[in-house]
Length: 157
Image 1: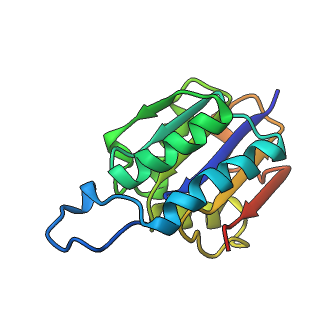
Image 2 (image 1 turned 30 degrees about the horizontal axis):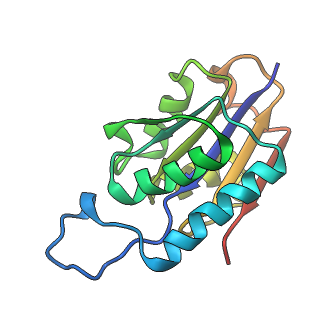
């Protein structure tokens, strides 16, 4: 059995309305273009999560919906992923009940977790970056102590 995790940082957000609450910021034009393109690339790689779990922030939800549409996977929203630490992100995957999970969330948690899981080879997750990790394990509880057998990193730029 294998355990699989995709970390997807939300696509580029729009900072045009200074009065808008951070949680409610939409995607910028670039983000609207990048999300479906990166979702297609993930699908073409053969990575198919059993679940997509997203932050409730509008920019993350919109990004997750693009991935869900391309991968034909329902999106679950988790308010704990808004501003989540690397520890919380990993705990969400571990507690999901699925063997293959995609998380859509924010920095700095996404970059910190990607760095930890890649042995510091992924230094930063830019907007709409996708990092995937695969372990030849049957238990999520060991993924933070065992190096993945495979990992990938893709960015829209």
